[in-house]
Structure formats: structure tokens, C-alpha cells
Amino acid sequence: MRPRGPIADHLDALARALAFDPALARRVAKEAEDHLREAADAAGGDAEAERCAVAAFGNARALARQYAATALTAQTRRIGAGTVLALAGIFAVMEARVAWYGLMQWGLADALKGMSAVALPLDRAAFLLAAVLAIAAFVYLGSRRAPRELHPAYGKELARAVALCAAAACALLVSVAIESVLTAFRLLAAAPCPAALVPAATIAAEAACAGALVWSIGRASRRAMQAAALMRN
Amino acid sequence: MLKGHLDMIVLAALAGAPAHGYAVIQEIRRRSGGAFDLPEGTVYPALHRLEQQGFLASRWTKGDTGRERRTYSLTRSGRRALADRRAVWHRFAAAIGGLFEESAHAAARPHR
Image (tube, rainbow over all chains, first blue to last red; front, side):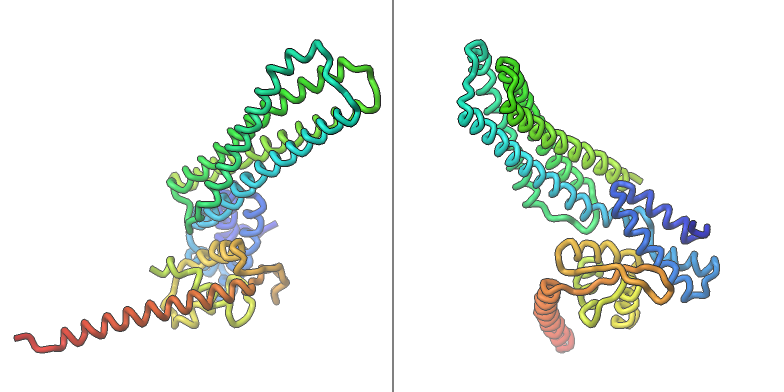
């Protein structure tokens, strides 16, 4: 446990201010502690030396704002890249399932043809919309440059990019849901056989992919909101 | 004004040898003759940013005190970036120097 004193208090303040990124907070705390202890030791190592070291180090929230700009940009870029990758992965899995149906000569039951005629264009439109939104988010993020310090205007730009990714994820969820329903009906209409495992597995993979994307966007949004609190004094 | 050049200052401080944050600040202070006296913590977000941009690499090392510390070193692209910024700075300084010299001559000329 850390001995209490000005340095420990400052490290706690820094950890609170960097709570939007726990891994970064741990790294910064370790670096800052080494710095502050070395500075305090060089000045005598007593409580006064600790206070001087803390004062020379600077305000915790101001420092966190500087970290936030880089950390949130990197996080949002990961989300953008993740959205594009999720789309590519789901597309590949969808194509694999269709190829499997072809290989197995697994046609659609007559009773399902009507539903499929309505659902498939919706599915394609949702997927296309997701792809357009994801590419737009990716391009938008690529054109932004992280400032030295997080400020409200840049916070809004990042929020816009996350919103585009979230919209893409929603459209992707619609597409995966339609695919899941169609696949479920197709499997129910057929006699149970080992070949049914492939479409079931591909649907599970798509759902996992879309779920992971939604989870990471949710986490990024929560972190961005925590970081936004740094801009309010 | 100092803030706008912080990245270049940090890169220059690391040009000699790898160093941890505290040593980077000491080096900046020493080489600037104490003129650059910024809040010490400011250097860490700059180090982090430069690492993200690929200009620096870092690793944990054990210091004399037994505490772990992050040691930063310039990467190849960091050296290139420093050389580019140094060249831009020299051109800028020469241009401003020329401007000031001209205005000093004009001020020294007797008015009629």
C-alpha cells in the first residue's frame, strides 16, 4: 500500500481523472509515482518536498485532458476499424452459409419463399446501409487529427464518429436478426441432420461478431462520457 | 508558444540517449538554461502522444531505487521527424532573424 501524503493524494486524483481508460490510468500512475518520488527525494524527501514535487507536476485534470485527446482518438479509431472488420467478417460468414446451401443442394421450402421474398431485400438493404455508415465513420475518423488537449469541439467530432459506428452496428444487427430468423425457419423446416450444424454455427458467429461490436461501442461511449466530464469544471 | 513546440523539444531531448520522463524534463531544463520551465507532468502526455505516432518506443526498466520506470527512445521515424522539424525551425528562425535585422537597421536610421 502507498504511504499517504501529497504524492499519494495526487496519484489518486490522477487515477480518478483518468478513469475513462483504466489501463492508461495504471500506466500513468506508475510513471507519475516514479517521477514524483524522485523529485521529492531530490528535494529532501519530506512532506514539503512532496508538496513542491506535486505543485511542479501540474493539475491532474489538466493532464488527463491531454491524455484524453490521444486515448479517445485511438479508441474511436479502433471502433471504426472494428466496425469495418465486423462487417467484412459477417459478410464472409453469410457468403459461406449460402455456399454451403448450394453445396448441400439445400433449397428453400415453398412455405418460406414468400417470407424470404420480403425479408431478403430488407436484409440486403440493412447490410448495405451498415457498410455505407461504417465506411463513412472510417473516412471521417481518418480525416480528424487529435489535438493536444481534449476540447468540446473535438469531443463532438468523436461523438459523431461513434454515432456513425453505432448506426452501422444497428443496421448490422437488423441484418443479422433477419438472417437468424430465415436460417431458423430453414432449419426447422428440414429434418435434423449434421449438415444443419454449419448454418447454425455461422449464425452463432455472426451474432457473436455483432454482439462484440455493440459491446465495444457501448464501452467506448461510456468512456467518452467519463472523459467529457473533464471538460466541465 | 512553448506548448506548440513541445513535441519537437521532447524529441530533441531524447536525441542523445533513451531516458525516462523525469530525465527528459531535467535534460530540457539543462539544455534550455532553465528557460523552459513547464509543468513537469506535461511531458508525459507528449511522450504518450509521440509513442502513439510511432516516433518513440518505450519499455519498463528498473531504476536505481528499485522502482519501475518507463524508458523512451527515438524510433527511426522519430529521428526523421526530428530532422524535419529541426530544418523547418532553422528556416523559420533565419526568416525571423532577417526580419528583425531589417527592422533594427530601419530603426537605427536617422529620421529626417
